[in-house]
Length: 493
Image 1 (cartoon, rainbow, N blue to C red):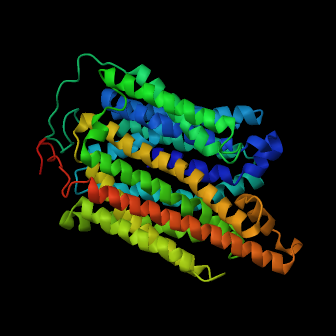
Image 2 (spheres, helix red, strand yellow; image 1 turned 120 degrees about the vertical axis):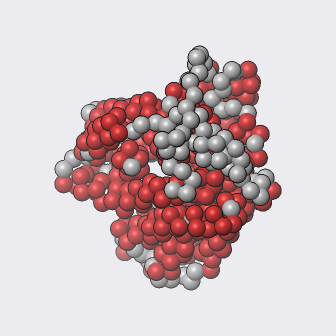
Image 3 (spheres, rainbow, N blue to C red; image 1 turned 45 degrees about the horizontal axis):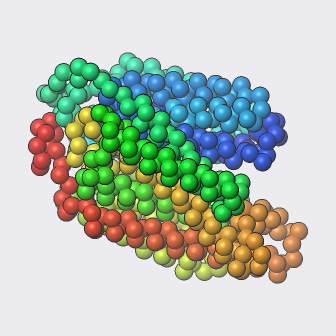
């Protein structure tokens, strides 16, 4: 949980210190790469770390991830300009990719099927606590100390996590699922082959694709040469990656990840989850401040209620899926999420803060029923030596979904604003102008607020479409019952 906490708090604690960082180092035009660079590194390394954990074990990969994250944190604290800080954030992200995927895999290794919802809910509570504590801690450190402390604070937490992992983490055997003292063990493979060519191709393809999605429409127009060049390069490298992986003895992304119906369905469903999560995490704070007129802290609370109900729902999900199965539980959860997302555009204008907060509370409860059963279920369908790769593929698809969602829904929001106001639409610029409403005529302010309200409504309708895609993937691809391997038996239950 401490290791996961390093990655969980990173994004929220940095975001509140951006003004101080820019004021000290400059680089306002490229500061978004503080987040984009980290996201790119995390996303494109997930499949690589998943395969490495299956090959060498979870503990070495997790230790390497913590060490790399701490080295990156120390370098970030010593950054001398914005370019160096962005480069060191990428180093942090290389460690963060190992933390996110490996911790989830270890939870499946160490705990039998009945106990996994409890430990996964505890891991989810780390993200919930980080969503609340991160902005406050970042603001305090940046305002009363120095922004460099938001990186230095990782060192004591990471060193304690590293000590606990090295001292107490004992991996189960390399065959089957851990089942206590009686778990079977087999000899490790005599010869280990690492698909370095495949790893490089995956990294390069993901980097080009995500750079195009993150920066398109922001740093340059979508139909400009940079966007088209990056997307075309990603397509070419993607084809090369497929050829390399087909010939590799131990591919980083093996073909069975997509040939097996259960894993393919969960990958697509979690990709759709990443897509729809952009609506509350990216656009709801803007809605709360620009439409409802709330301050940053109150706007953060409207969003944070979702992170409070999510782990509670996840912890209780085993009482549902043990009776009706993983697939039906996930369908039930996403159906609830679909109704909540469709209800958001029906909120009155301007409305009361408790109304979107209530919807986010319900959304968190619904998504807790959706995500955890799918993660636990898909991890339970594969043996030890395939679990790291499977978990990484699920997390990778969700991360890519978030990047696609940020690009697509950003274009949707700006398009609605352009249609409502005339000319080009820019939600971020409009939100900044509404931060000082006293400088605008009241009629203009009301028009702008209504435009933002309409833009966010359309984003939520798009998120509802992503929820429908998740349901479609589960209904058409996922088997009625997941082929769960017996605990320590290697047989289907």
